[in-house]
Image (tube, helix red, strand yellow):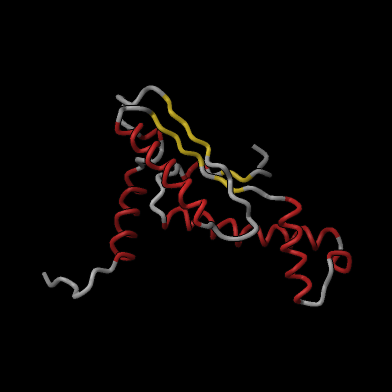
Length: 151
């Protein structure tokens, strides 16, 4: 086997994280039966107005340490991921995007503006969730929530 000349963290980290995901270890329902007592953290949902910043990364690291420690101590751990709509702030960033196109929310109309806001949510909400994955967070992705979800 020939070793690469330089360490490629992206390759290694993706491989390991995918193994963790396939194992189902982040889902409390798939933990061994000895994990009985529940321990849950609901991630403070970041706004969909942009990307994660260093404060998010630090907070995520601390929560990840706590959840992994409790999991290793035999707790049935759930770390719930999600994002927040940040109503007015999201309206503001969508309006700025429209302005670049020479449009306003009034010219677009309510329905079209809401479509654009939901498109923004899909794009930036997914970027944020992918950033959590790149951090190696042991979140239960099967339960991801958005503050405007019906459930």
